[in-house]
Length: 163
Image 1: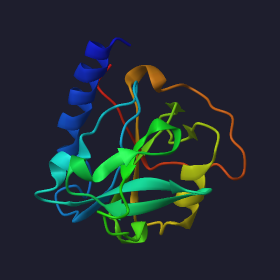
Image 2: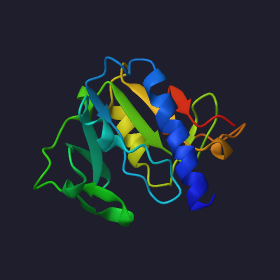
Image 3: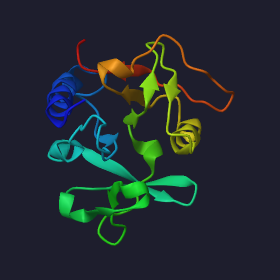
Image 4: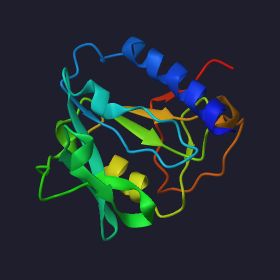
């Protein structure tokens, strides 16, 4: 996708977020800082109404921090923008009501193909079942089938722009 197409599709996805179940009442939302080519949710735009948690890679795990300002982010593992732990308090992701999860591909049933390091599989396995897990992708990343292994975690909803 061209940068313009990524931007337009990301905007379409962002506009559909308020219609998600639990969005209106959610106080704490875990998201991600997008890589080039991933849907950009602009989660820090939610800061006025939500506590926004973003992940930082720490060894083999994702550690979440409450972030309120883009100046509190710095380039981290794999070139992803991450919270600066000196400026952003650590926050337990189990307190979130919704978590947005990136992926390379999803099925409509919620299977997810990640980037192969298992960060989100380990995280999702540790979260309580009541947290709404929202996979986020572009329409072309929704596929009929994906291989699945016992450790692979699924999402509850796949959020994409209309095809």
